[in-house]
Amino acid sequence: MSIQWFPGHMHLTRKAIAERVKSIDVVIEMLDARLPGSSANPLLGEMTGHKPTLKILNKQDMADPARTALWLAHYNAQKDTRAIALDASNTAPAKALVAESRELAPLRGGMAKPLRVLICGIPNVGKSTLINTLMGKRAAKTGDEAGVTRTEQRVALADDCYLFDTPGMLWPRIVVPESGYHLAASGAVGRNAYDDEVVALELIADLRRDYPALLAERYKLTLDAVAASTDDQLLEAVGRQRGALVAGGRVNMTKAAEQVIADFRSGLLGRITLETPEQFLAWLKAGKAADAERQRLKQERQAQRPTGRRPSHR
Image (tube, rainbow, N blue to C red; front, side, top):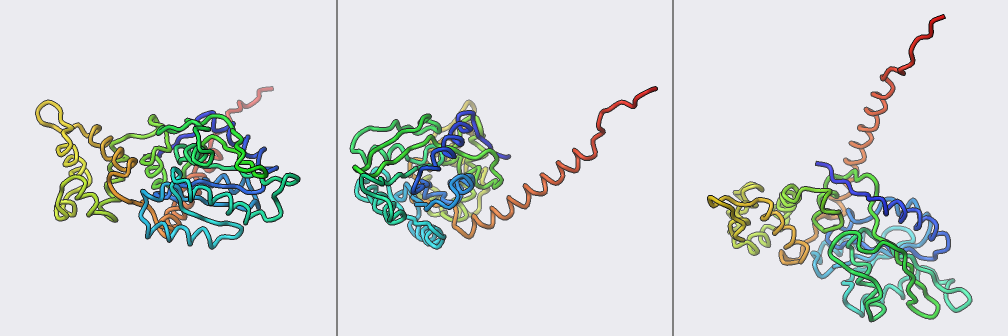
């Protein structure tokens, strides 16, 4: 199953970012620390060009700290890029982004040349929560569903530092299947774009591979049962343990799936990161190759179609 979600307002956001970035000094991209590669927008680099970039791995308190360290090293090794991890609701580390932005644009600052920062990210990544934390008040709307912020907002972080917030934006075609599942699991994708059961099964497969102990602890299973069961059997076991039953004692698999996804989003499963830099780069390479092959076959089919022009009779 391919997960895709790019509603109409995101086209407007894309245009707004492309226009705003012309006058911006630093671009902040907010990532989900539980899926840093999948939550990085490939369009952003195209739109922002050479602008210095600060990567914020948000929700680090819900992510695997060892894997967060790998991702910070991965991004900090890139040119004109800095990366920090934080929890957007924590005031002290949230304020660090202002200092980091000044480091990335040392020639900006003061009333004559105020620092202009653009913050971008996928839906539901926590931008509005961060802005509210920085301002010490409810300056931006927040929510646990994708697409809460719909308009650009300007926030004065200091007398000489302005931050421009934009609505969350995905990209028109997700070529990495694993990214689609991870984005759906995190809540970055609208509910009508995916099937809960399919996403939950993919999530369980990730947990069985990398965090079997957390899966067993949360749903009162043994490690042997986790290892010996299929993903479907584990989802059914979750449903039974959580009482998601229908007539005849059968498990409502949709309800069980919703429970697994909700537990991941809330952090009740524990500190989890669904991908490492090495894993994501391998998925990206495979996804691009598969997408290129699809495009090649599509072009071949189009070339083989008859033109539809009728022969002329004179």
